[in-house]
Length: 293
Image 1 (cartoon, one colour):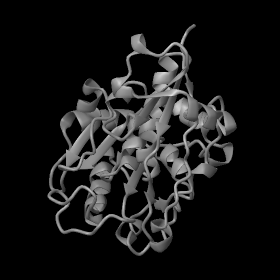
Image 2: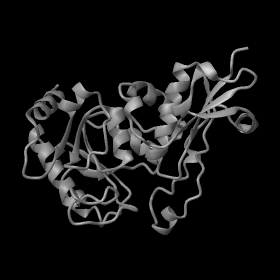
Image 3: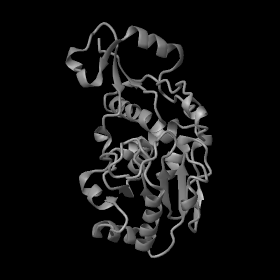
Image 4: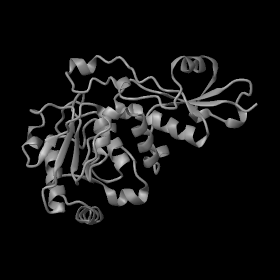
């Protein structure tokens, strides 16, 4: 009898960007191996967002529907009765024949297994998102700026700072100016951030800048992925926007979160940058060509 195979993403108690990585790896494995996904538990109790009065309270269970994923009592039954195996240790040839096996996906080691499959992930992510949380289609080019504040600490030097620290707001302002200088006009800017207006004042005072009107993380990620240019923070939220978009992305020097594009595309579409420098020629010429098309 053929073994019944299931995939199950174990979601960490973290932000949505981190939680989506094991989900995405599990989705692709299930698709490639004719297996069913056991729906993950998106509900995680968090007091921090309430104490910090963050806009996003991280109640992610409200955002998604199960679709074909196995939920309810059947989920509990399979998790209790099937043999469990971490993806890294899974060997199909030695799978038990008298019971199902559930392959476990956990952690956020890298995007490596997702590279080149962004359209499949976008379709699956959009399909499982409840319709009321899917953003409207943007009808013209814009710069998407993601500023991560929230539980990130303030530091003086963004390049030498700890990973979970804020980038200087002045860096984002300078990056917007550099993109607009490259484009030759003031591209609209949509600002995605968990910060308040006072913290973001230097950006909001620039012409043609507005904050995202959406309230949920998944809506903002999908909206950010429609940007023509992304100016990212050092966070998995920015990574997901850039990964889904596969578009021109600016990172602070030394703070690029990791590989999200195929090598050939990355050389032209991604750059690490500090104020006072110009973007690489390939980045500049590609951006001008796309905007003027």
